[in-house]
Image (cartoon, rainbow, N blue to C red; front, side):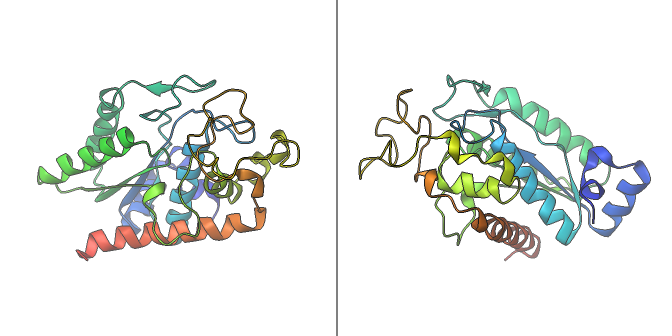
Length: 243
């Protein structure tokens, strides 16, 4: 299957009807435009969410809605090339409107899948799904995020080894570790993993919250993506069977 066959924005109406007749599910990926240090693109959250959703649709059917590149929450709102909404109200209205129209079109299941997983973002998608499902409407909404994926060998982070490897599994040319100071010229203290000075612009890993991405190994990316997709499909299946 080509990439365009599951992307809503590329589909003609008859193609939408045919795909939804086979599997009436729409994945709605969520992300942000946000600083991810010098070695990663600012659209990482949306790129990874969209890539995993597209992989799921290729394997199990359904359609992927265009990524919503607005998010809320987190400690990076004043970083360069970061556009973060002040609260969920600025985003939730757009999502709920989209859900209403998707239901009008006969969609049975919508998956809100966020690559941005600040607490405010997670609370927003959970509240939307809970409110929607409690209303008794026929369409079901499932809300989850990249950091909720279980059984991975990487812990979730911001621009660290996990997100670097995740993006590398989809867009390897967009990971440019050589943009960071080398480990030899800028070694880290043993306890420098999370908040220990990384909000300082002079820190060699400015804005990286998590494991040092300079140990990135490109060959691990595709298997990480595969594990994420498998988990997401299992999450959807569990919701639908009541398990």
